[in-house]
Image 1 (tube, rainbow, N blue to C red):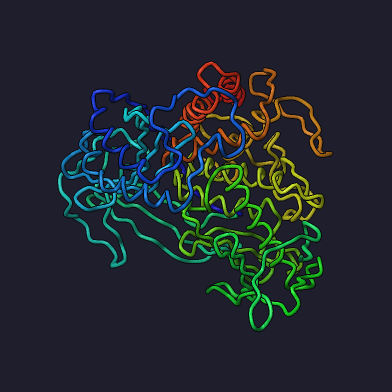
Image 2 (cartoon, rainbow, N blue to C red):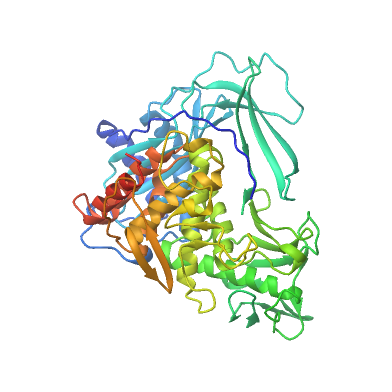
Length: 536
């Protein structure tokens, strides 16, 4: 996983504005949003009355009702823009609507300026069930305005004209180009570069490819959902959005061939049988879907009830896995010797969660936000592994421990003490954003472990951990379920594309307040844990 990012050290200030004076307009917006949501409860209290559990704490948003809510909110975007005091050239586009268990509606928007997409202009509004606009989280607080939308410099024919407002800078007219290729390890590459359309200065760059009863190789004999056809059976899961698993046959492009079988008994538990990798990928996708639905109240990766698809047997001895937004799919290599496919449960959960992140906060895959993007996949991928409760691959706080990508039996990453991998950071410092995103993720991974389990020595499912804090403090965990609820809520309704570690602290504190109350022990634990990893 050798992604190289463009480092940056700018830090965007995020504020939540209380706009009580705009309650009348906000009431119209929330009325439209709530039309399609069974969770919206007019008059419900915003203060939790008891500790929440499972998806009910977060609010369940079925795909059909979500679609209606988005349509209703889109019809009110002009009123919302006016309420937010946006400029006359700015327009809002609704990306998502989530109604939580207390009736608060969180509406995520992208912005355009004179018809041009504003990169780094995303925002989320939070509207109480009463219609009061409680606050707004913006990727940038800068005023979106440029002198002209006519570029002084020409760009390649494939370039897209945009307004770039990312990472604390002054918004400028820019060109976005995408260069496709292949990374050193064989992973596809899709590098986005943002260039000032007036001066030609490179403003930002990031890599868009986010790396990443059958007999399975890692999970033992498992039940998988298949579909019967006239010719036999195929790996199509009609119970989970129609998820399909394909065999690329060592190719590196295209969809591949849908995996089929004559008798509905798949694989032999070893890498010698080509079906085995498909079983693991199919099973991991199913468990991730089930976790999203039952634990997070989310209907699929994008919340629309539609499945992604999996591709196995990518390339020749390809030692990686990745998520690609352009195909809405997960792809897995076969590892060294083409016998150790990278299809373990936590890897599947990791890759699918890149899609979830893209559909929610859309964290920029560079610098600190890129580290948070990777950490989110580790955090929820690990949570999927615990949720699966599989005896052959018990839940743990080790990333990729089954796939042996290092060749020496060690995991790829450690959540209790990330620096054990030799590259990841345990604690935040001002240079963190210069690290590869897989290593700057360490601070958030460490935060999650400490929040769930606490500091010091501990044994979980037979694995020994010993987690330090930056200030020597002793932390007591609040439990894994509460920890992932807080992280997911922060991701889905408070983080934006430019959220950095300071912003992640604010977002998770807001989430903990929503879920457990302003005086809760959980909120105190979140704050103390961030301090314990030096995010203050």
